[in-house]
Structures are given as structure tokens and as C-alpha cells.
Image (cartoon, rainbow, N blue to C red):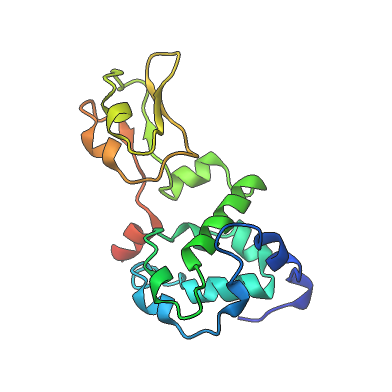
Length: 183
């Protein structure tokens, strides 16, 4: 990969620094422990938590915020306990996602396509409240129109509602991890 200095933002690390878990990004020395334990790295060719941390440190803001690579992380946090420098890769990736949403670099349609939240087909939903009762994150609500809706900012794409919906009204696109495993 060729880096163009004009496309780097040297202040990007400072912008991400206030997010929880990002204060140790500059301590990464590239040992690869995070990559070695990452289940997503095994199935999604473009994904490597070590690479993402280094991209942050280099100021590769545009590639990270506007690209799809940060959405491949399953947020399993396996990378966190193995890092000898206490760099919290999963937290850094979460911060990048939050920043992408904040900057409106990603819209709900794109997030839906990336398998980041479930979607209810209002025509099939019978408002039985199964999804509302079973969701551990409180994402489903019954809309004034009489069917369930999923609040994207609360949904963790766990798939519980999809599996438990008796009307089969809820869909969740396969995550990048799942699509990578199907290659």
C-alpha cells in the first residue's frame, strides 16, 4: 500500500484519543497478538486489528471512517486481554464506528447491508412483543403504526430477534465475518 502524505490527517489520533480505550493506540509496537487471536482476521482478508490501530496512528482517517473494514469487527474483544501494551483494539474500532456515524459517513441503509442491525418488515410483523421481551439491548420498540421497529443505535446484530420472531418478520444481513467465512 502506498501512502500519500496529503491524504493523511496528523491530528486524527488526537481526535480519536478522547474515546474510551483509545488512549493507548500509540503504544502499539506491532507484535501481532491481536491479529493472532482475532477470529474475523481468519475469514475476512482485509481485516487486521493491528493494521487498523496503525492506520489510526498514521492518520488514515478517510480510509477508516469511509471504508468498510471497521464494520467487519465482531466486537468479541478477544484482542484486548492478549495485548502486552494494553491497546484496546476493539474499543478503537468501536470509536471509529461511532465517529463514522457521528460524521454521517455511514447511513442506515449501508449499516443494514453490512449486517450491523436487524430490520423489521412491518407488513409481516404482528406486534407480538417477542422481540421486545427477548432483546438484551432494548433495540426493538412497537411503533405508533402498530409494528416493531429496531433502533439501529441500540441493535448489536446478535440475531436473537431474527431467530425468535414467530412471524419471521425480522431480517439481519450477514455480517462481513459471516460473508468472509462463506468464501
